[in-house]
Length: 427
Ligand code: AMP
Ligand code: GLY
Image 1 (spheres, rainbow, N blue to C red):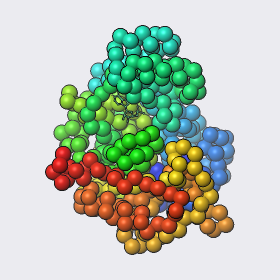
Image 2 (spheres, helix red, strand yellow):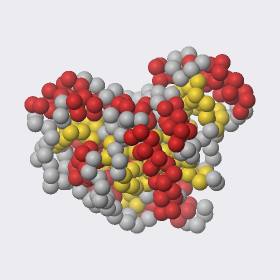
Image 3 (tube, rainbow, N blue to C red):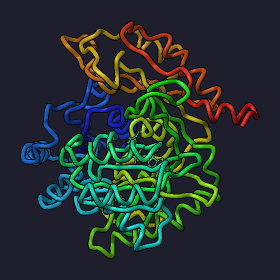
Image 4 (cartoon, protein in one colour):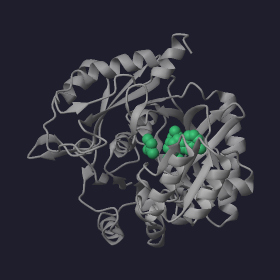
């Protein structure tokens, strides 16, 4: 089949890398893609927000299947539009993508279907949100309701901080995403991510991962899209995975079907493992970036039949297979990220790093300029390695990092630290 992947990040490079290995693929396209995706797919300069152009391209190139990577086109209804045009697509409809597009929507689903999550209030007026904060006290969490590129969450240590956050959100700090505010209980525990494919009715658990959101070592400093990740997440025992399926995922599948928005695609459940058991922090309705890189690295099944089965409602009886290794990815970012940074810096040594260490380099913000690979974003490369342990995978990943020549880049040197402490018996 001819397949089009939508997106341009490390996640889409990992998806294209995996999809390109399938016997089912005739031609693989990626729109718009990046400098590394160009090695495994034909990149096409389409704007994923311009649905008409996407549809015309699909018709012209006889695309049989579209895989949508990022949340924005999903929430905006790209899959609805492709379906209207009889083009098969992987990913939820706009109705089902509300699970990521509106935090208040998800909290209401949790309340109605008794899904464990932080206690919350949902507000359209600053005064009501503030009264709730005053009543609950701090620490407390204030969130812009809509999509805010991972930045709309304020973990307030004091009531004053929470009140300021409410003013900021209603004042327009996150644009339309801040038309409503969710205020919730501050949860404590260890975080993990759990990925589950769903065809509207049937589910298959994929794998678990843990990411590092903060820019600085020891998980300090401002939050980013993710500075590294590893899979599996050691905190997620088989017993906990089974509980998450029973207590969180299965009721969500039922809720979405009951509401007339059956969920087809991948659930990316952000979880807090608390003393009272697993609780849902949030849903994303697409693969994580960089979590996808470690998942694709470990998956041994052909992924295309699974993606197609999820889109067609035929997942019943399917399984996904994984190797027993740990995969770990280190993000190399432009100095300054998540603030201002340069673009257009030359990158070299990537292939040598892969040959020397066996690691895989997935590209995020890169592009080819007259045949030369240059930086084109904040997060630029994802150095992904496997090992029998997190310690071993980390060692290989940093050997590869040190082979790459890019003076303008930086990375965290402690990706996987919590799991490594566990392996050493320190946790
Ligand atoms: P979200 O975008 O909702 O995943 O939030 C971003 C990050 O904020 C999460 O990964 C958590 O680290 C943290 N967070 C969100 N909600 C809560 C909560 N209710 N309690 C504690 N931490 C939270
Ligand atoms: N790494 C977190 C995300 O993709 O949202």
